[in-house]
Image 1 (cartoon, rainbow, N blue to C red):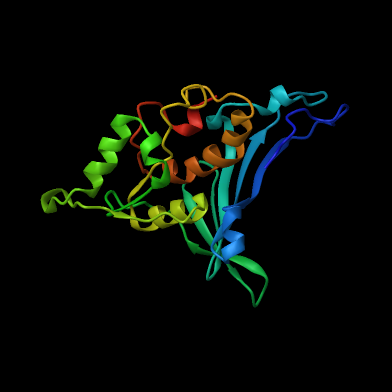
Image 2 (tube, rainbow, N blue to C red; image 1 turned 30 degrees about the vertical axis):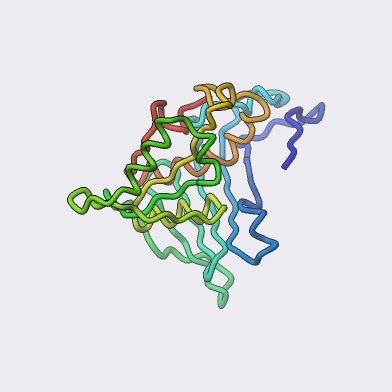
Length: 219
């Protein structure tokens, strides 16, 4: 997905900016597999024309974020910082109905999700961590099962529901892309993808295994 980071000249100010990935997991369309949408809402502070600098903000400046999952049912998961709530589309009335309020991710799960096709490109530390999850050790609840759909929304929703570990693992040769600061065009990808999904997990009191701060705190 290509995004022009330059806003058209004369773009009028609005109170909020919406970032949207309309088709997360787009490669799944060809095989009729699950897809989703991810959104992030930021408040626009300026009183004049909006520039892209107004939009490239910290993830924790979000006022709302969430996703829609198109599966056996269509669900909307949303947070504005005060809990995580799930709504399910009722086709009979054409409305989203609250189906789970104040979602809490289980403290412990038995599933991890990662694109293991990139295993040889990961850092040695990340390889050891995934190997640890695979190793049988009943007292610690291992091994974990691997579940990866190619759709971030579907994988995050599974783990939000049943618990587990979601890994967006940096490749060893891509230090610049995966530094503490996102660079263009990666910053735009952070805005509508990783940052938008992160608050749902953070507000449900989940934690991430990462040497860096929460995704929603990166610039």
